[in-house]
Length: 227
Image 1 (cartoon, rainbow, N blue to C red):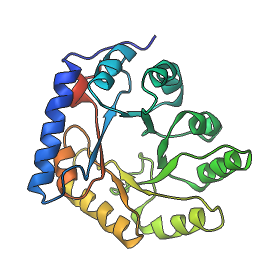
Image 2 (image 1 turned 180 degrees about the vertical axis):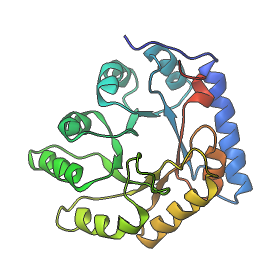
Image 3 (image 1 turned 90 degrees about the horizontal axis):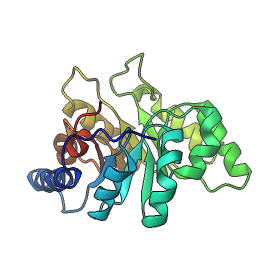
Image 4 (image 1 turned 180 degrees about the horizontal axis):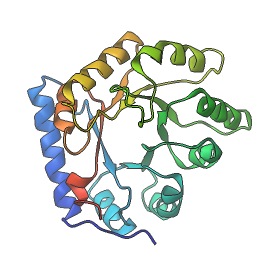
């Protein structure tokens, strides 16, 4: 059983975040609806997720394949149009389960994982939409492709491996201002004609929205702090 540790009313949190996102788009001169909200439901229970879904939310993000497999089959039966994103690191030995569970994998970050996804496609599975995770801060402890290596990586995965990549994702360093990292990611996406930018979390999603994010990933601002 996944514990529900939300300390706020998740529906009230959802409505507040939606309002803040709309205001951020307005400030950034961006069209209404040009950035979608991914509600990060990792570590939160199905009751809290159901409340948010009943309020109209349909896009959710999970960090772990096994946790998503435990929580979302029943929720998908209740909300058939629900979309589920993998926003945490993916081990190659979980590739098949991830492909079967998620609609979007945002954390494609190495050739070995790309090859594992190709293997699942060759077995007849339909692949989710794919984003490449970029390590904009080049932090050694963090997953993602370094900006300087992105050209080569994209050429490999979209060329010989024939994977379709829709966009880029990043998690800026915790101790740095996020704006320059979001700007860099947007520049990289434009250079490669990639339309999707997943960037911004609870503490900085408004900045991300004003700088071109098409998806923002927000959890604690909706559900409250995780235990």
